[in-house]
Image 1 (tube, rainbow, N blue to C red):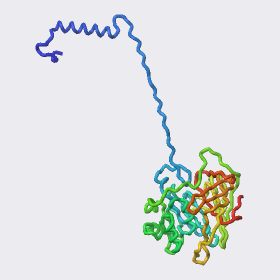
Image 2 (image 1 turned 45 degrees about the vertical axis):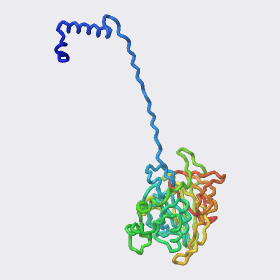
Image 3 (image 1 turned 30 degrees about the vertical axis):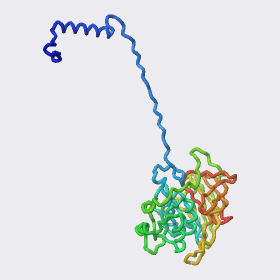
Image 4 (image 1 turned 135 degrees about the vertical axis):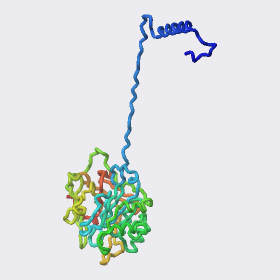
Length: 361
């Protein structure tokens, strides 16, 4: 205490003792001494509630399923041309990972797939050549990439002057993708099995995000239509292809059969069982091109309107498809003109060639 004073300000011991007594009396009075009761103290506790809002992940435009990866939601669609003849089917890979699969008629009643990827990647094949129908399909997808193993010069010109982004085997940026992903000899028609991610690396920034082709039921929203075990589609010609779909409650999809054989991926891979099947009665015209046998290459006319069948959740709805022009958007409605709602998931679109080619089972 003394260190706080100068020599001229030192306090004697008696004065210091008196000061202590005075301070003690004051403190005693403040504390409620002298027999008086202390004042009652009330404590109030404040509780705050925090509300957390969870934002659902974005939805993939071509499946209606959640996709938390923003880069996949916004990237372009990629159409891969895949052989669908019996030899091609025997070695197919990756079709089960596509968002949408178009089945188009080719020469002699055979079919080829335009497998459309966007929300996920896969190794897919065997990759085959482009057809003029691909331009009509791709125009609805906002500048999609198209992967194919070649085309005659006239078809190649159509592809390269269209809205499609070329990642075919002859495009300089994509050639190496094919050459490093071959199986078997160079003469093998079924040798190309390509990773979809590689195409995005070389030209993914050149395309546009696809619009939704369909609208989908919300979670818990009931499906509509008449219960059906399935449907059958026939493609005419010398090597006619027949396809059937059977509702499988365990797979929650339409188990696909082609030419009386279960359609599954190579090596005992997954059975194809898309969530939805959309069958479009489609006019075909002569494209003006011929294959190596001299057979006319048919071209799907995807404008105008026609009958349609929509298979989803074990049910079928008959309706119509329409498109105002080759560059327009598709419209899909039921018989009353109401917009169709599908179940979120993969959709197969069969471009059935003519009236009478479709049978609902």
